[in-house]
Length: 284
Ligand code: NAP
Image (cartoon, rainbow, N blue to C red; front, side, top):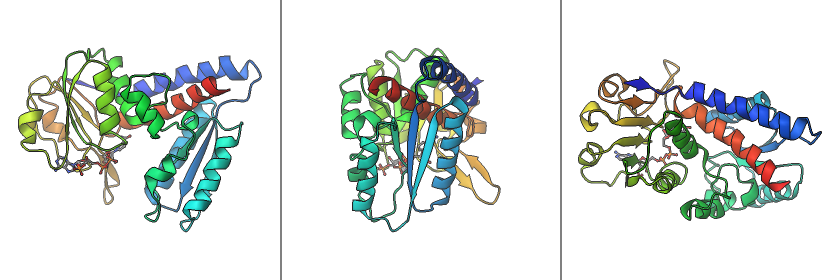
């Protein structure tokens, strides 16, 4: 069994980006790529995420600007901010931190972002490009990070049976199409799926993103399977983060497995930085 080192792979992605930004922007006296981060309200987890993203930007030479809006911001006010940033030629990428407060139609707000600046890959245009295997789009960060990790560990995805336990627009749906584009055979599972264990036991690769500690147990995994844990569950008392996989026992059966923390999480941020760089390269 091998444990995937997402921190290390993310570090390598960021080192390469740092070089690319130096060569293609700084040394040519061009303004470095710029990310605009919009946060509405004061959700504590979101505050930590946006701070982490801004810090990661500065590590690779991307400039970032935070737009912190009041909890009571209206849809029209948020629309104005997004439309201004869409027009701003100094801004290459726009990230709208989710979840938004409950009075927003999240899907409507996300789709106001210009697809060329949609570094989270969540607009209909970019999701459509992913489905049609058109690589001119910007693609979702967590799913891209998972595919990048598997490729780094030389996993041949062609013909592999993949089970994804999640059908969200953020994770499961885009990831399913990324695996399909790599010639894998994909089963998407969710809370209404019958006989989940029967399906996971047949899988060469299991991706779990349910948000429940210890959800994927040893008896659900076949010998030698690859297990990717996307879940983030916070144990506030112990101030510890854990995933959805019973790591101690599942790791005895898996051939390759991601830990939490240090697996998929760091890759999500690395892919956000890469998308911001790609947006700047493509659109200037
Ligand atoms: P979400 O929209 O709530 O999705 C959860 C998925 O799990 C849904 O598809 C749900 O099914 C399914 N599910 C829930 N209970 C189930 C059960 N008993 N059996 C089978 N499926 C079940 O959440 P999300 O935004 O996709 O995030 C999922 C998890 O990944 C969270 O822990 C989140 O923190 C984490 N995450 C991590 C990263 C990272 O960078 N590491 C990035 C994004 C998300 P239904 O669709 O039927 O409700």
